[in-house]
Image 1 (cartoon, rainbow, N blue to C red):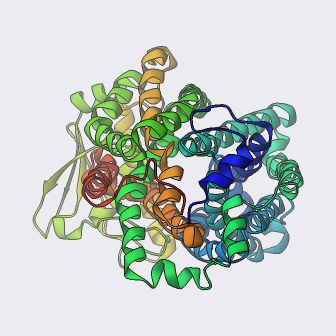
Image 2 (image 1 turned 135 degrees about the vertical axis):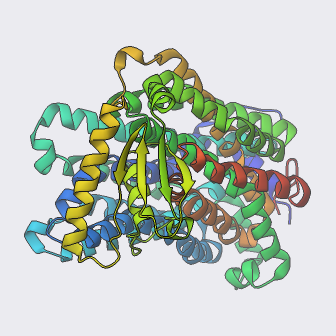
Image 3 (image 1 turned 180 degrees about the vertical axis):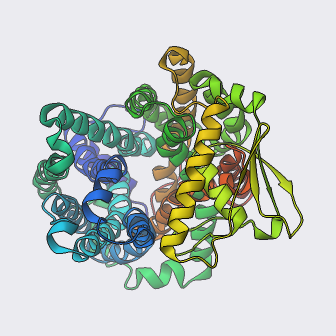
Length: 558
């Protein structure tokens, strides 16, 4: 079935037209609001994590609090693919408009309810349980939101402009981050110290305004012309989930889209939107407000290139941009992040040179400390030492010792002995660990390791340039991805099929990037070793995408 004629007629635009008429601007605006909502919520939780932790996880022991805190952040990512299945099936059965109206209401309500949720001090353990439940609900809705919005826009786009039309929805990741940052900064400025006690709720409650606008506009939309024609002709799928993953021909395409497009895009996207900010604030000790403003400026400067990449993909194809973005990222992430260190906090490199840090331990007692659900305990003498250094974001070398030697840390010529906590009670371990942390921190300070970056030593221009470069890689891969995914799958099962690789990629490959990167740093001691994860994934995506995933540019909607 070829439905491009209907879409073009509705648009009143020919193949060569590059303008967007009033009706289609409403389509793009209404569809993009949901993705804006998604990223606004994401950054709110990330930016206010410390306050949320104090409000909802106080009163329980440290391990339980850590589990709840980690789950509250990760739960939304973990369930996104399930949301893709649930709402994708609904979208292919009953329509795009109907489904993404449901998803945005669920997303909005789940976000706003955090603003009125009683804290642990009010209702005890029920507070974090409800918070995690809201994150699960929000994650499920997000799983159905993006696929519906991208499909709806693409199915309205005139021939030859799907990349440009769908690029508008991609820019909302940056817009959501900037909006959340501005709202938080404004609330902090207006409310002062009250922000820490109750003012943090205001940004969540303000999301009701976004919800109201989104619902009002989406209620005025019509069903997509492609879906309308399929329904009129009786060509809708009766079992979209079974067709999507129950048939090997389509399941193979889902897997190829995941490993040959989305996985690489997801890790680059999370490096540019999340990890580079964490690296500046946590590893390089740059003031959070300074780092946030630098990252926001770089992302804002890169935002117009979403539309440019969309237009380019309409001319040369989606695949080249994604593959080139992955290859450039794999080749340059290490030198770029070393440049960030040089221009943000040169004292870090100087301290490493004058007083190198070494962990001396028996290798068998050193774990790979990847713990996405917060249930593992790392209490061996080696793990205690490496966890402390990783928590302080200090790079180090490894030196093997015999099994009889208790692990220790060398800071220059000074030695700090670790301890084995496997047989200690929780309270004893906590006391010993605090003492070890204190002694280690004092030794590092004496050796010249900076507690924070010196603003006078920060080269703001070069930092902005490097952050902007990373942001461009994110734009290159994210800009054309919606059009590529939409065009890969037939219209009758498009909502379900495209949502699966998108949310498996962003929810799992991208969502767990900080945890995996932290584990790599803790295990190797190299502050740049966490970059191996996105580099390897980018190489994998470049290979799979190049040899196994077809170009879709110029094909008719089916």
